[in-house]
Length: 312
Image 1 (cartoon, helix red, strand yellow):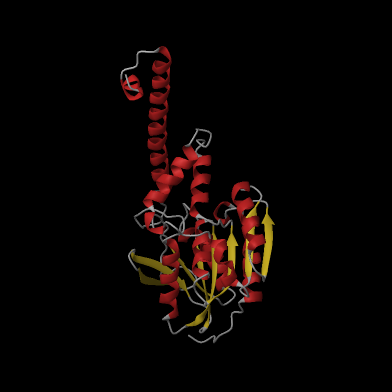
Image 2 (tube, one colour):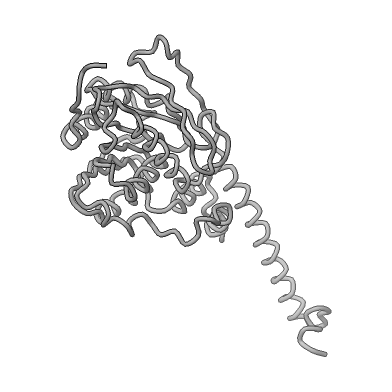
């Protein structure tokens, strides 16, 4: 009898045990893969929140701006005008957040005469779809910058970007490929979307299951197969030499803080690093928000002056 026949129809005690162990391992791998696929689906389809404002009564006289994302449909953003011909700052919200949750930061920047633009990423706000944790979100940022550059009331070659986690990755990815970006604030940025997937699995309390993290990464990579072969953002850091960059890390988010610190060390000059006690602007108390807003505004005022004409 051949070895294959012995495994198909085991007659010896040791082959029976080995066959049972192999069967258990097979079903364990299948079960882990199925659970990982479900977890990843939940992660890339966050619960959406949408904020509506009365455009006629809201301070700052915002305009609704529609723009198209190649291969990604249409997006709607809010443009808050500053000085005519002044730079525009695009705010890129974080994972599970929305544009409406950044309005106090918008107001702080607009009060200093900046043009400010906010919009919702795919799978956030009113938008359907799934998040790619920055791959196609960077295309959304590029489309927003392109739309703003066509306006007659902003400087078409002078933009600043602020982003938090998902938004920070998208902003950095866009900046590495766009010479119009002249100042960056990156709050809790990561180097690769897979890192955000791993953090998501860890927050679900499933990271201790054997092969779970790797299975989740495989599932995420399969969903985003068109981006296979993409390198980590730090691989192109040399394109940002000369562009001012502020890296913000939060002490209460140690996973992302460690990644952000590592990226800061790799980034070319000019660069600055700040550690804050509590991360996520949306969840900060009023005092922390004011301090955070002052830090953001001060950085842009220093590195991206809001010069232009007061007339509109």
